[in-house]
Image (cartoon, rainbow, N blue to C red):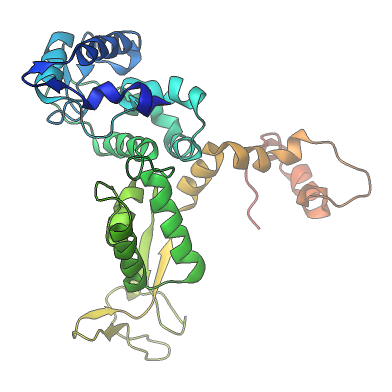
Length: 315
């Protein structure tokens, strides 16, 4: 297991001197980086010291000196920013949450891992940073010895909140309790907001639109400036206990294009979405919507559309 194999990473000093295992390990790290040039910036590699935090590129000797002086960034047992997460680590130990991240952002994964820039000090763009942070969260244990990663814990908390319609305060309370129950050197947040921050990079683009509490209309476009529903007269806002105005009801709109892109980026779902074109039909058996007369009529009417199995029919 990587954590045991690389315990040398956080056992740097013997008094004032660097330990031989650490010196040897840093050399192996440098060689690993050289063997994965697609994740480098020319002859420069990402530096995983606490100051650079894998966001800056330096020549190998500068990285070596940084690691000798400052050590490695916390909990960086899997060298994901140097390419390991996409190659070696995934072969050694399957990680469904890492796979989820790569599925969600997989169209640009090479670009995101290999951020090139003219300046060594250049920060990765926002999309790249989200990808790197998510991969790190998928690989980092919640605490030393934990079977759960930071990303898995955040995902499961968010899932439970939705499934049982839990209030923020309820989740905050349980998160705080669990934080006290596990070892102090953990990476679990004490609030639901801190949990959401871990998952930010996985969010689909969306738009929040205020609506009438009774569902009469959307406060949108020509009605965006109204404070009351022009159909039933209901107030757009309600007051909290502290007197703050908040929308009475909110609709969250997910544009169709990013949703379809995410579906086709997910291996299992993409296979299901093209099932109708790849699987044999059983005569006189209705096993799939593609067996219906409506589907067949559309195929006949729009042959060009039907010829591409990835085209989506919205019902």
